[in-house]
Image (cartoon, rainbow, N blue to C red; front, side, top):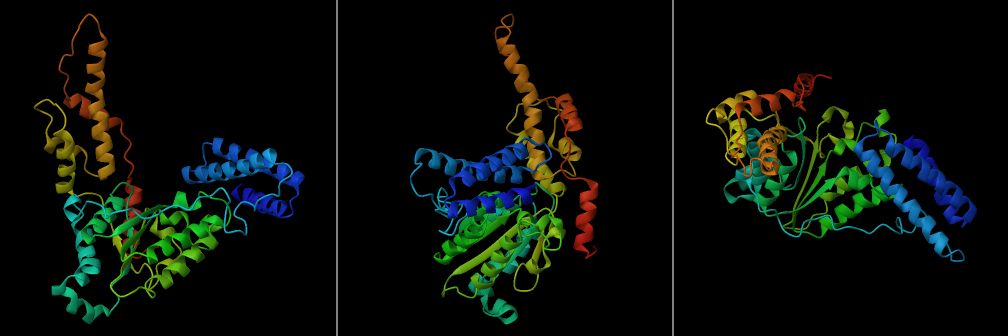
Length: 382
């Protein structure tokens, strides 16, 4: 259905160029109908729904403008030749300051931190600089692909890297790139790299990059091939045009590395790939300890017992489980306060029953099948 929608968008733009008011209204209403119907469908992904929503807003703005000024010339179309959607406001992609984080804020993931130390941090430190240049040459910037199960903290890791290197960072959600209609996504990509070119130290981070860089031979890429081409072109020139003293880093993250186009992973692009695994036993205990110490709990509710029950969960899922566990005594306490016959809270605490029932009902976002697929990818098995 997205193909039909994009075709209608092209027709809408042609009508705008021709200033055919009747066609603008007719096609615009069709676009709104398709977009709203797709947003209401339960099997449409969140990113696509956001794309439809943004596109519908833009089309509706055109129609509203036409209705308010019936005799005025029609502005350029959606993603038109004037440089983009006239209702699209270019955004500032980069943070004003480097994040106040560093590698000590990362729980576990020691292999990931070691990889960043070798590939990124080492060439910037005097004691390693000569060794690095002996093996890597003069190129100080790098392009890294982080992949692994969802919820393992890939975004947080990149923010910690930016803080450690005192770099401004652009955290680019692919839904933001795709939010505008045809033609504007490519402009978003170019804007990101143009803003980066003005900075001395920066990191561009593309989250869920598989949404815009799927294999060009797959069905998933039918609407994003031009975006992928634009990204590859910008990446190729990014490091070559750096000024002396600039630090330029591109990091991308994905839960589906096997879906990425091969051109994205070849030499000179995301040739450095780092697997971000589930937290090990020590890291799970750290996650549980941080969350449990915030809560009043019975003496038999221990970090060791909960950590054992939560092995195989991602850091994000552990935090979510602990929040749901905390909600049970919270609800009891609220009901105690509301119960006029009691008149006061009874000091509810987290019990082992709260933990067992919550963990038993929680659906782990990381499956065995998913882990096997990552293992196969790591070993180069299709």
